[in-house]
Image (cartoon, rainbow, N blue to C red):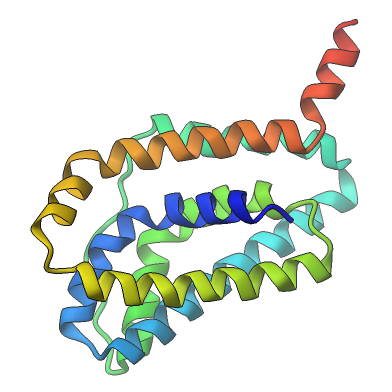
Length: 188
């Protein structure tokens, strides 16, 4: 398990949602935002892992390295995610549904290739690690939500940083899965 890759993946997939977190933290209690965001992340991670394991039944891991094309594609594809807030009586459910509606597609397509080769033990460690990052991010966003310099940098460079991270993740998946070594061996 590569913690740097998991951190980069988490940050890049959630970068656009960090703005939404600022608004959610102003609207709802911080504890409710934390739980809703955590639940949304865990749901998408479990789905990504389950789909990846199902694919491994039929295909070798190195061939699934081709899934690295998904994050690279997303880097060059305009994001049409809706920033609409989904209203619900429960603050936790509202945050979770907002997160799922805004980030489901990106999370599934980015985390699936990253998690596809993980053992169950590593996946459980990944859930704990990403869970901790999720809670930490909420605390950090709460602390810096009103700093104008942070908001300005995110507005100016956030999209480009996210796209660069997606490309790096895709290239890592190509390498880590063994796809590149199989292609090189095939060409020789």
